[in-house]
Image (cartoon, rainbow over all chains, first blue to last red; front, top):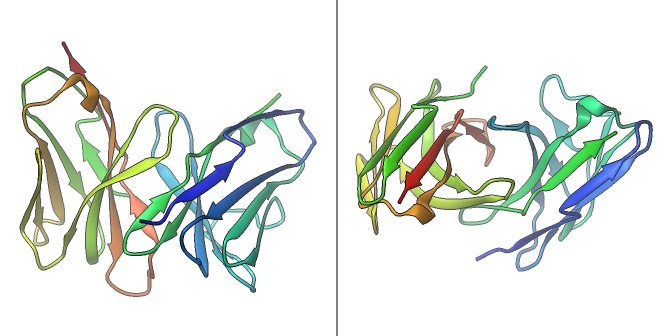
Length: 112
Length: 113
């Protein structure tokens, strides 16, 4: 099955800085990847759909200028949290869909 | 919100007992999936049931789907301490959703020795 690698697994950054999270599809060329956000003890909320070679599709209420998505190749999508604030602290997870959805290990972002 | 609801929110049982979690959703679906998440980790796919199926089994897992009630249940039989995790249902919309998943609110299961 498709293996999805997400990096880093944990990051702590200062308020106002930007953080880049990588999502790699190791076994499968993914034209589409999905980015989710999960607050503690809550469910996953879809943030955006990353489309290889074109603009990402953002869900309602998600600021596209704050959460920059780049899907430059069929195996890599990146999510950059720009000018991070403490309220951006969350667990971010990417996924690719092949025969089923495969998820990365997630990235715990803490903004201090 | 299109997010589904799951109940119970939390469930604590003894090892060897069965655990049942329920999921309700709002839209017409193509399929419904159940995932497991250990604390602070990614999700693991457990089982998928299509909209034209009513019941499915996989090892100690049994999933039912009632599209008329827009609900599903996940039964874990003979639970083990290692089953302790959060369990989420996720639905794929019947039309226009592509492969996007909408997740339920989750059930935190604790299996005690």
